[in-house]
Image (cartoon, rainbow, N blue to C red; front, side):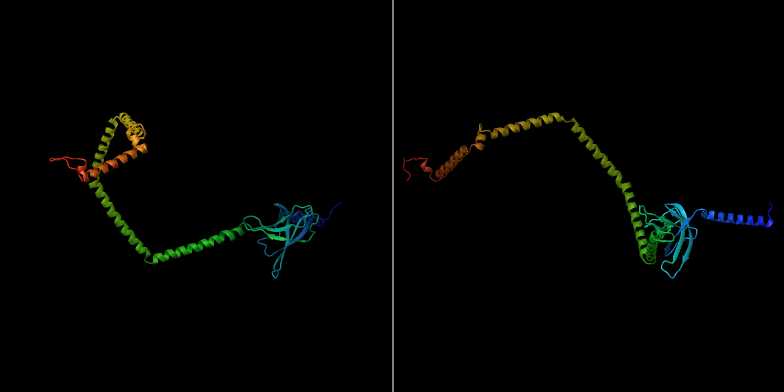
Length: 300
C-alpha cells in the first residue's frame, strides 16, 4: 500500500511536534507519561520563585511549579500552582515552604511532610499552609549588613573625632610635648654618658675592693674550727643547765633561799632584828659600852 506524499509529511510533522514537546518537557523535568496531582499555596512574596521551579521533599525533586498568578491588591499577592507525583499523599499538617535554591538567589518549594499514621490527607487542588525559610542571603542581610552598618557608623564617628583633634590645638601641643620629652632624653643620655665615663671606674674599683674584703672574711671563716667552737658552746650550755638545776635544787643554800619560804622568813626576821639593834645602839650606845675613867656609873 502506497501512501501519498502529503500523508507522510503529516505523520512526520506530528512525530516531530511530539518529540519537540516531549523533549522540551523532559528538559524542564516534566514526565508527560506520569500522572500528577495539583495543589496551591499563597505567599506575600515569592523571592525569585518562577514557573518550572522545582518542588522537593527532603531534597528529592517530586514536582514543578506550573503557574504563578498574582493580585497585588491582596495581602497574599501570589497564588502558586504546583504539581507533584500522584503517588505522594500529603497528610494534614504538611507545610509548603519557600526556600532558597542555590547561591545565585533562585527559589524553590519544599514539602515538609509530618511523620504520622493519620489517613486524613489533602485532596487535589487544596491550598496548603505556607512558610518562608530564610536563606543565606537573608541571614547576611539581617545579621552581617546590620553589623556592617553599625561598624560604618562607629568608623565615621572615629574619623570625625580624629579630624576634630587634627584641626584643634591638641596635635600641636602633643608634638610640643614630644619635643620636650626628646630634649629631656638627650640631657639624660648625656648625664648617663658622663657618669659612665667619670664615676663608673671609681665605682668599679670600690666594688673590687669590697669584693676583696669579702673574700678575706670568707677565707677567715673557712679557717675557723667551727666544730671546736660548737663543742665549747655545748659545754657552756651544759654548765648553764647544771647551774640552773643547782638553783632549783633544795640541797644548796641558794636553792633553799629560792625554794624554802621558812628559811627566807627567818633570815628576813634576823635582818630586821639586827637593824633594830643597830638603831638602838646608835640611840643609846652607853647601854652596850660602859667605859669610864673615873668609875662606873649607871646610865639613867
